[in-house]
Image (cartoon, rainbow, N blue to C red; front, side, top):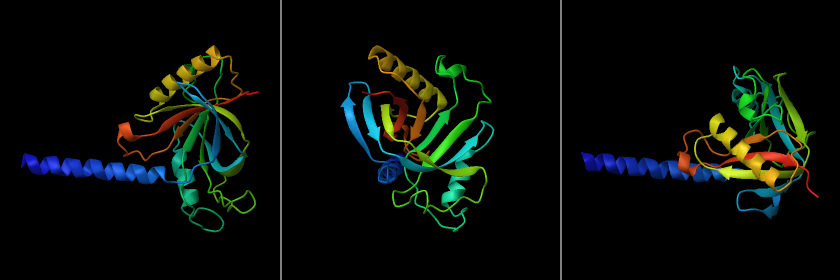
Length: 201
């Protein structure tokens, strides 16, 4: 009996690993690595098209966006999922992010497949959902595995800020939490990132 359970557990782990690999195959916005440090890297992104929703901690922002790509748009068109899903808080950059008020508004975004433009992407039918062009630029990025919790994000965000402060690199926008894997992906196999837009010469 124990042998059967062991084989089942191994099969489950392998299945989750394959699912994780499949998720990593989703389209991701292109970027160029400008400079790599031991702890983080600097990337340059072009303008990206995204669908977004502004929400509070009491809302489920993900569901609004998932409904859009599932057909809640004027063309009732199903749109391929991309990666990552990003979240950003409207916070004061001069204080620790953990001091941000619980009712602060957040923004969640799905990037749209590169075949779309702002003119060809189907318009959302929900007025809370909007299409936006995210202006390109330079981002400092730190990558980590584990669960995509706010606590893990906050810790890595503060860590990245310290690296940038030490390297005299100026942050010009709030931090972004980027999640690349499905919730059921095993924590050691997950890819999470903290991204902050920076001033780069």
